[in-house]
Every structure is written in C-alpha cells, then in structure tokens.
Image 1 (cartoon, helix red, strand yellow):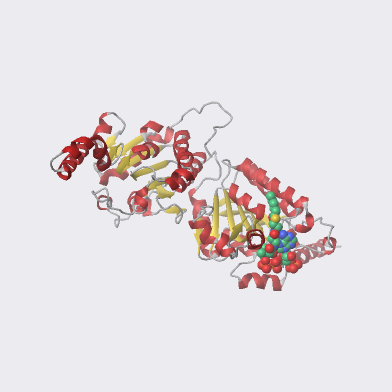
Image 2 (spheres, rainbow, N blue to C red):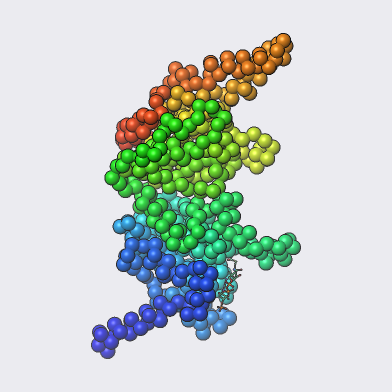
Length: 514
Ligand code: HXC
C-alpha cells in the first residue's frame, strides 16, 4: 500500500471518528443550545491551535454487549492548544457518545492529559458533559473517577485547573470540578448534583426539576460551587479566555504583564465613597477607579455579594482585589463571604498574584443563624488565608474597619506589607453608637435627658476613636492618604514589594480550618 493510500485511509478513519455519536445525537444536543464537543474545544482555543490526542482510543468494555459497540474516541476529546498564545491542556466529554459516560479508557484519556498538563506545567481545562460513571463498566468507571480526583489534588496549587459544566455532571463526577480552581456554568445547560431528581423523589418523595436542584443559577447564587455564570456557551468561552489572560501558566511563573494603562476618567475616586458610614455605595467603582483601563474581572459575582473578589491590573500586572461591599449587607463578613474570600486569597498566593484589600465593614455578621452555621470556623479561614499568604499584600481602609473585621481584612497584625487609610477611615472595636451605649450606659440612663447624653457620648467616642489617626500613631496604619492619590501610592507599594521574599515555616502543610 502506498503512503498516499495509507494517508487516505487515516483520513477516512479520522473522519468517521469526528462524527462522534452521529447526526441525530448531535442534533438533539444542538436543540438544547449545546455545541458539539469538538466545536467547544476549537471555540475556546486560538484559531488552528488545537492538536488532538488519542482519537483512536477504544473502550475495553465487554459486558452488556459493549463489545459490539463502537464508541468514537470513547466519548472524550483530549489535546493541547493555546489561548492568547499561552499553552493549555484540554479535555471535553462528548455527550453524543454513550452519554459522555466515563469508562476506563475515557478516564485514561483524561488522566493522560492531566499528567501531561502537570508535566508541561500549563493550565488544564476540562469540559464536563456526561451521564456519569459508565454503568456497563462497573468498578472500572469508579476507578477512573478516583484516578482523576487524585490528579486534581496533586495538580492543585501547581497549575490552574478550570472546569466547564456544559451538560449533566452528576453523582461522584461532580467532585472533579469541585476540586478544581474555577467552575464555569451556562444558563439552562449546566446541571450539577450528587443525587438526581429521580433519587430524591424515590427516597424523599420530593419533586424537583434538575434546573431547580443544580442548575447554573443555583450554583452561581446559592451553593457558591460556580465561579462564572454565562447566558450562552459563547459568552462562557470568552470568560475562560479572559481568566487565562489574568493568571500564570503555573506556580513558578507570574501572570503575563500587559502594557500599563490609566483608569478611565469616568471613575472619580474621591466622589464614590459617602462620608456617612451608614450610606451604601458600590465598592467595585473604587476598584475601577484604581485599576488599569478601569477593568475589573469579577469572580463569583452573584454569590455572597457582601464581599467582592476578582482580577484587575495595575501597571499591567495582575492584581487580586478583595473588597467589602457596603451595598450588600453593609459588607459584613459571614459564612459564605469568608469562604469566598479565603479561597480566592489562597489561589492568588499559590499563583504569585499580589493582593489589594479594600476595607469597609462593620465586622462579622451577628445572629443565631450565623453562629450555628459555623461563622467561627468559616470566619477563621480568612484570618488563616491572609496570614499564610506570602505574595505582596496591601490594604486600603476606606471607611469602617470595626472589630474582628478590621483584623481579618489583611490588617498589619496579620502581617500585611503596607496598610493605607483614607481620612474617612474609622478604626475601632465597634461602631460609635454601640460603643457609647456600652461604656457610657450609666451616664446615659441617669442623665436628665438620656437622648441628649447619648448623642454627646457618641460624639465623644467618635472624636476619639472613629478616625485613622489613633491607629496611625501606633504604626498600625503606615500612611493616611488622600483618596485621589490612592493609585499612585499602590503603584509605588507594588513596585517596592516586587522583591518581597519571606521564608515559610518548615512543615508538611498547615491545617486550615476547613
Ligand atoms: C452508560 C449512559 C449513561 C451512563 C447516559 N448514558 N448515562 N450510558 N452509563 N451513566 C447513555 C444512555 O443510555 C443513552 O444511550 C445516551 O447516553 C444518552 O442518554 P439519554 O438518557 O438519552 O439522555 P438524556 O435524556 O439527555 O438524559 C441525560 C441524563 C440521563 C439525565 C444524564 O442519561 C441519566 O440519568 N443518565 C444516568 C445518570 C446516572 O445515574 N449516572 C451514574 C451516576 S453514579 P443510547 O444508546 O440510548 O443513546 C456515578 C458514580 C460515580 O456517576 C462515582 C465516582 C466517585
């Protein structure tokens, strides 16, 4: 056989596999608003940059007539490609082939590309669209999942891991995305749950749709499992590319530096924060007033909105922003916002991304619900995450910094590198009203006009403590700065912190309160 004929045969074989599960299965998927698996991969990657591996892999299932079934690529596409010129490893489950179910060969293809990503030290992107463990393959499927989970854990903190939920992701299968750093979901397409509606109906007698149980909205707003929500797959792919542009390839590198740009004139920093500490505002506008091009790429936008996390750039360099959001529950720390912030801080620390923290909060959220939900355990994660982080850590206290909230939000006492405060900062054990009621209770109740006395005592307390100067006098605040000079101070601080190098304690790993 001539090489030409052999090449033609290769092309024919390849063409057949590229049909996936066939026309009607693909049509069924498209009717649900889903792209074919290979098109998804190609859409995420730079043009003509995808190189596929293991196209000819075949499953080894023998039971339940599986030996008579051809499963093209065994229901998963794997390979390497580029995003904005940066290399990535990628896999995409193909629901049109046996429901994207995970048999042994399917799992081997995934673990092989995971090993490759870890060896090359480049990000891994996994597109999940699967009916779960391939029922016909029994324990081999479970083995496959276990081997994926193991690799997710080994790769954690070494390479960024991204999961995209573009179909069902059910049962134990959810734990691979759960072990990764960023989970993307798409409206009406993503379905993620441990036990499906049928099991819930049988066991608990409750009726619930897949959407209500574990749809994109649920995971973006309630559970916090998802980090990015999109209305369509195309929007989701743009978000993935954007994320890749902010993060490094691996833990030994810094994110790629872009050309520095000034913030837009539309964001006037000295007009965003109202002086009255009770008046809300959108802290994202402060970030936009500071960041290059006023661009802020928010993460978990709809979950625990009392804290804002995400990426921006300063002088072209990626920065992780953490900011209390006074517009939502006055920006308190609670169970969910603590988890959200702590996880983000740890990712930034693992991947060499400096942190800027903007503080304006009345403290931790009081109440039986929060206490019983474990606000002590969850709140501790923020303290832990900041304290262990060795990347440059800069704080700007905008307004309120009360009680435990003051300490937790990257205070000097947790070894922040530089703490700035605006003249509007109020650093105190608690708000002046609460404080005056406690320490001047006797004077207030025994006064001829208790209300007048209360107001007087509140003012007294406010004059003494509700300012940045007491903390500045003790060196807890490094500089009290004019709001309009914030970006300049931050740029200087980031520059001098470039050479920061702190030894870490010798230990296997810390024991973060999980
Ligand atoms: C084998 C499967 C499969 C599976 C789907 N298929 N899931 N084959 N193993 N787990 C096959 C179907 O038989 C069908 O094949 C094709 O994929 C398309 O499936 P449909 O049911 O027609 O699709 P749809 O109506 O869209 O429903 C999707 C679905 C449903 C909701 C995901 O397929 C489903 O409930 N599947 C089973 C889910 C499940 O219980 N998985 C096991 C979870 S336990 P044909 O040949 O007819 O086209 C688990 C344990 C892991 O995952 C533990 C790890 C620690």
